[in-house]
Length: 343
Image (cartoon, rainbow, N blue to C red; front, side, top):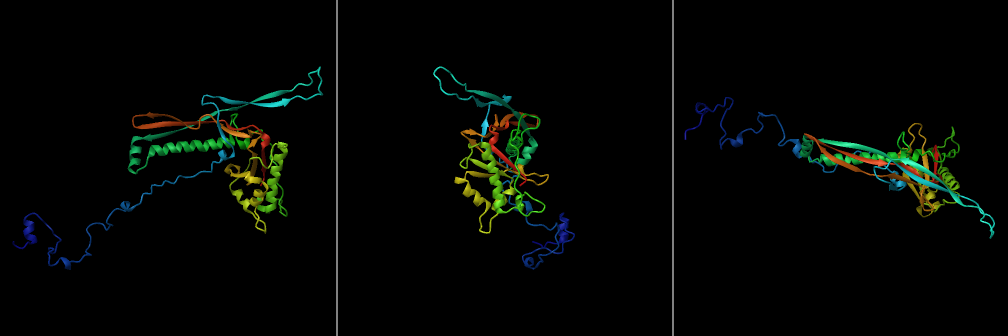
């Protein structure tokens, strides 16, 4: 076979104007491997093909929802119910000396009826055909994620209604119930100038004394129906709970003193972000006797926790409504709650 030349190849239609030689078995190893590239310098594969797509999804967190730790939730009626009406009985009457011929005094009751409205609230998710398809390419279950978002948003508001009620409705939360006893004032930190009632400026014993003062007000209001053996909870803002770790020179903390005094761990500390006063920094704490003589002090009530509506299909999208209901906090025994502001 005759030797190939660039001229002979050009006659056949193959034109290499910038070539200087042919690669042969003899000169293959001698050719420089660092010659100038015709294409843009790059790696062997796009960077996207070397990425690890983590299957774990990290949700963005909001404030902790802890209302349910304070008291139980109870279902009352259904979503057609307008309001909850409950009765409070006060026993009346006196006794007189016994007589065979006389009936003596009369005992009776004075019933009082109280009501709490039911509030219905909702949210809706929407997802389009193209949006869902594109998300599917990234292995994202868009519909499931939006359904979970709707449930989460409803849960956030439900916790808020339990603690703060619903504006312009006969629905109250634990923190703004109109029948709550007035807040008491904590003691003053020794040697503080100006005088301070905040725990950050107090010693271990002074903090413990404030909690005992709050407990004392609960006992006095209960008139013997509340004791250290009652199921008690202490509510405070998350940041303030660090003050329970303050210890004496003998390494005895506020928490140690509480555990020793309240037998069998009957005092549960619950962290409630809503108790933080964002205006002037004053913190509020609550102490609650959850159950008094077999009757709950308070309950968080609802009729429907989560109600999923029908999926409505439109030409290129779908939507679905989710709803819930609440009565807020129903406080049966106001004297079972004590509060202190300014710690």
